[in-house]
Every structure is written in structure tokens, then in C-alpha cells.
Length: 212
Image 1 (cartoon, rainbow, N blue to C red):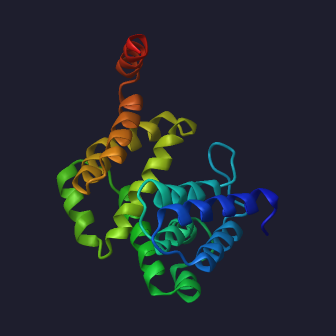
Image 2 (spheres, rainbow, N blue to C red; image 1 turned 180 degrees about the vertical axis):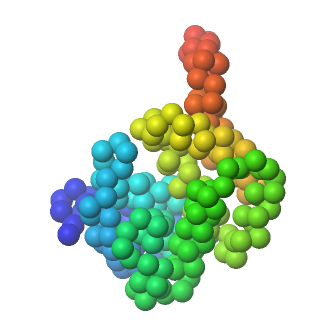
């Protein structure tokens, strides 16, 4: 299944992991990479790119920008499998064990909550999310997932852009601050502001460039 492009992607991911993680089970990451690549082989993103690019980029964020552990990188590669393909949490549990399956399951449940509710009370949402999370890595994976989705938000319809930007500003950015992820918080706020108030955003960007 892995061609030259994907072999390079895997090599790049492993190199980032070796540089940033204390220990690394390379076989685990290879297996998660191949499983995700196969599971998403027929899926395309709104941008027209292969869907696999998304879990791959999320895994890179987890390995580089929120350096956690190899289990989190594997879970990041697999985080959309149960949600968007024919494979289930049971399949992931069978293939990768309980810890990874539980992290993926937690991330999937959070996605389901956001899909089925309009966020009105941000603070009560944050409390509910915290009560759902048994493993802190679930929430950190969701930060990485949201960060990549915000970086590629321009491909979505306007209504979804606004909804995701508001969720990001109200829930994910304050949460990232609470978890001590200042750089992630700043970028989430910046990207959300860009979509919620594009005129003011362009004005500020223009002034900053002029000052530079």
C-alpha cells in the first residue's frame, strides 16, 4: 500500500518522533500509519487532498508541537478511522490494544458531541469534556486535530467555517491555555479571529507588516 510518497511521509514522521520523543516504538507507528492509510484509501478531504493527509498532519503536530509519546502519535494516525471508515473501535482494540483504542474512542465521542449540539454555554461544555476524558492524551489529540482543521478551514463552506471558528475561540483556545499550551492557544485564536472578523484581521495584519 505504501508507495514512494508515503514511504517518505513515514520516514519524515519517524524522524520527527526520534528527535522529540523520549522513547519510540517504531513498529507501532509503522503499523498505525499503514492501517490508517489503508482505512482511508478511498476518502478525500474538502480540499481534494487524500483524507489520510489529515491524520498524518495531526500525528506530526502530536510528535512535534505537543510532543507526547509514541502511543499518542499512533492514536493520532488512527483518530478518524472509527468515525469515517468501515473499521470500528473494536477493530482498533484488536489490532493496537486497549490504550490506543480508548484514546481514539474518547476523541470520537468528543467529535460526536460537537456534531450533535450547538455550543451555547462554553464553560459547561469545557466541564463536560473534562468529565468525559479519562486519559489526558484524548484532549491533547483533540487540540492537534482542531489545529490542523483550522489551518485548512478555507476549503469548507462559510457556515461551517464560522461554526468551527466560534467553537475554537470559545472552547478549544481557552482549554489549550488551561493545559499550558500557549503557542497552540495563540494560533487557534489567531485562526479563529481570521474567519470571525476577516476585515479587522486583515487590518491588523497589514499594520503589523507595515511596522516590520
